[in-house]
Image (tube, rainbow, N blue to C red):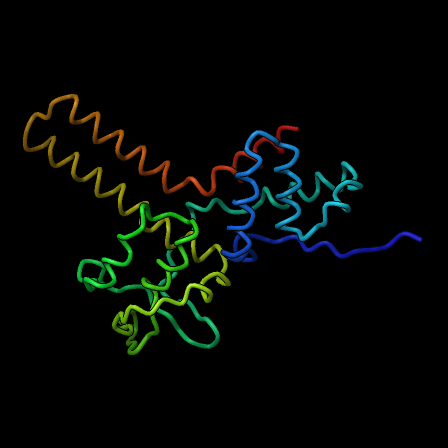
Length: 225
């Protein structure tokens, strides 16, 4: 008798928690040169399919699952969500980054890069704090106390994490472009300095996008089969 199982296919990044995403990325990073293994890991982590089941998965079923995952929205298109509810509590994104407290700033900048890695949950815990006052679009959040609840943010879905990440990506790239434009308008900058600024922006973009590149590449490879 054949055993029926229910396959849980995520509809988008809003169905995938940070904890699951980090586990997927870590496993896929260990098999950078093995496309078949990466495909299996993708289906295992995102669709909760066991290795034994994957071995007997037919081509038609495989293609159907693959196509469902390819319909995910692009991470860079997700917008910053200023308010996030967790366990009935409303958390607000730091409303004034230019006036962020020294303690919060120091705790964020201790990490090598602002990117979705093992430290990202800590960064989110610093940036989002309980809302204390809210009037229309204006709001205040708790003063940063140095307390970080990493575990809580591991359970938040990736649509919210990507929204925050790419807010910083876009902010950084806009700042770089404005700086380059300002220098160009005020003085003739040497070609080597201009080249350095442009390369810095490219490296920044690559660094911040790194966690999504493996998944993106795998999806593109799967689509071509």
